Image 1 (cartoon, rainbow, N blue to C red):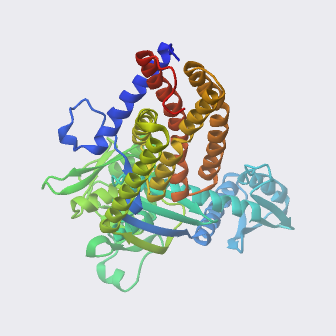
Image 2: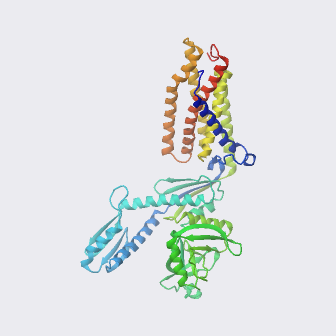
Image 3: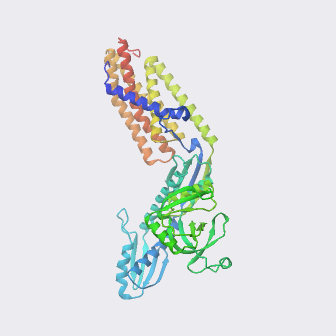
Length: 526
């Protein structure tokens, strides 16, 4: 006990400095700290900060209908490329039927259509089956293929939602899959659930199509639309427009979208295409100078400007009476990409800031009560010296937990506070094991130094066993739990590591300094 390795002292010193540096930003206003201080702070969860809760259901039926429509176009394209004449191409049930006009080309058509199918990721065969009945061919999506693609659609929707919410500046949103086709969204700090719902619930499909100026307004009002065109509603009360069905460029070619300002200093959206999109857009605008093209989002015309000159740079601007908020929302939609399927809102809730503040206050009181209770127990059981040293280790432990959660940008929820309190309560278990072992060694006739050495060395096995068991339980909860359960598990996991570190190393160093300074003949706790 007289000599503690320097690396242990250095490690404890660095850990203490780290704990203080990354905990202070959570305790003091940002303006009162120097500029070089770390800026990471604890993220408060929905139950503490307030915000919006949405339960969404992915419309997998609509996704399957769209998938079959795309499959029909794939079949049409493959057979056209192979120059195979067909009739009766249509979607029927869960597949696509087509009749091959020339009986001698049936086998070649079937081999060509086999290229449309793709193997399933789990090795369970193909996502569709190609069968023939004379000259009639059928491509049917298999049940395993439909299930796999629907699952992929839900996963893709989660990523799109995450990108859209992140662009709002909401910190640490919780987006979880629930069941086969439901998604839970918790957005702390976002107090307007309607805005959130409108943002993430829109499909977000952006297209650029030419306006059909050959159709007069009265013809459009009467429903006399040419076969190659379609009537679409205008955004924000603008009149409807007749546009060509052919898509010049779509949102898949966008590489950048930002909020900008037009020549009247009104909010607008600046965008840039990738190479392929820039070439297509440049060719389309070169061939249609003087005409109008429509910018369409989810089958709604948001702008229909005239082409004054060819746009070959791949950059442009969308105007149309935007506010700063609506321009920001459009940018979020474009950056997030299009949803693979529509979303239906099953449930929405708003958690007010008042409830969050009540929860924070309750958590603060609970933490203080837990800390004071542990402090009183340790001092009464082991005296001011040994009890005080364990309390110092406990304080450093708490600082390390907050610092670690700030660095990892973990979200602190009400169950997380429960995990913090539990960690503080059981953190002194290691000290109790060490101190009790010291008492036993003194009663067995050992010297003070031998008793202290035995207390740390022989209690270590029990300490590791207890904490590894707790860590295993926390990891299981984190792996299989969701939302608040994972928050509790994450706080508990951090607490396991910091508790062992502080209870063993910090306590050992402080007791070694005391022992070297006083050279006691017996221990105060004997």
